[in-house]
Image 1: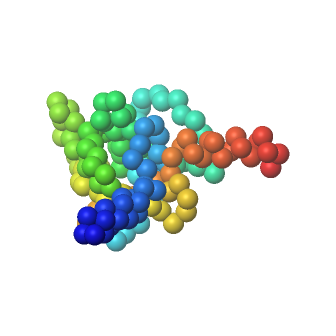
Image 2: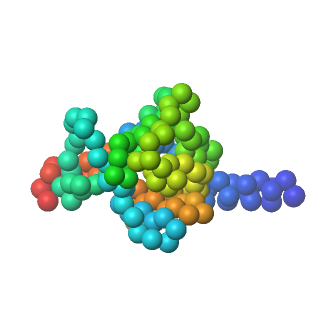
Length: 160
């Protein structure tokens, strides 16, 4: 009897986190951010050319790009360049760490590192397909670019 109750309890716990995405490959659009209770938003400034898909309604949105095969992620900058960092994911937690061998010393990277380089709990957002990364000081609301593109394509083919 105890084993049955224990098994049911474990199944219940695992099913609660079942809806949280654990696959972050590709681009994720930042919908909103808070740092120390204040609303903020990154502004990547770069001299490098980068081809981007522009989605109606998200024209100026900043993105986080996950490279799962390398366990790396490109994070947007705050009045500076993007930074490449590593990520470690464990169930409903994700941690961003400095990428080994890359140093971001200039002052322009300090705010970006302070905001992003930490451990986050992954939660479901208010709307379907939204995720929230939440730490002691930072909250990042995200949606997959792939999901948004699929919705736009569905609207086109459904005549909406």
